Length: 162
Image (cartoon, rainbow, N blue to C red; front, side, top):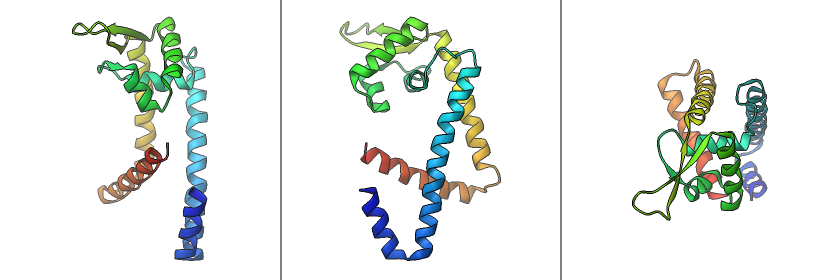
C-alpha cells in the first residue's frame, strides 16, 4: 500500500517531490526510532525503571482521572484484550493501576491510576511537553497550524491502516 502510494506520488510530481518525500520519510523513521530510544533510556534512569515502554504507554492511555474500561484502553493502544489484561495485571502488581468496579453495574470494571501511577503519568507528560516545546521552537502560529494539519493527516492515515 505505502509503496504504491509513494510510486504514484513520485510519478505524479517528478524528481523534486520524490526527493522531498524521501527526506520526510527518512526523518519520520529516524524520529520514531529516536523517540523510542530516548523514552527507553530515560525510563531506565528514572524511579520508574521497573516499567516497560508498553506499560508506560498503558498508564498514559488510562490517563489521570478518566476511569476507562479495559476495552477502551485496548482499542486506544491497538492491543488485543488479552495482551492488555496481562499488562494491567503487571501494572496492578507493581502498584501503578487499580481495577475499580462500577457502583451501577458490578460487571463493569474500570481502570484507574494509583498515586504511584499518577506520578509516573505526570513525569511522562512532562517529557512529552518538553519534546513538543523543542519541536515547535521558532515557529509562528501559522507554521504551527500547518504542522498540526500535517500531523492530523499522518494520524488519520495511521488510524486507517492499523
